[in-house]
Length: 72
Figure 1 (cartoon, rainbow, N blue to C red):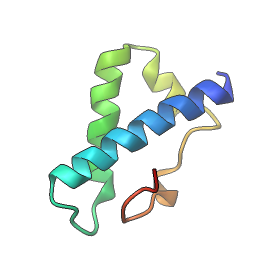
Figure 2 (tube, rainbow, N blue to C red):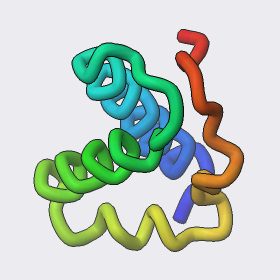
Figure 3 (tube, rainbow, N blue to C red):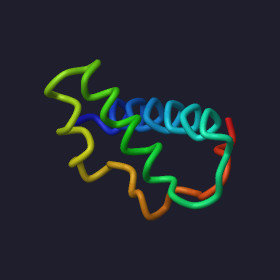
């Protein structure tokens, strides 16, 4: 998969996860809750090709996700 496309989808997951985090009151810890929820919503929206993006070598590593707000 084109890394530019993968970057775009990762950015969409990140943006949506940030919105979910804000909706939950910006708690510390457990960023994976919002990240996985965002992935699920976007998989539903984009269909079966979305999971392939998450398994690509350019996929975003959850371990590198910050625990706080994402700079926009």
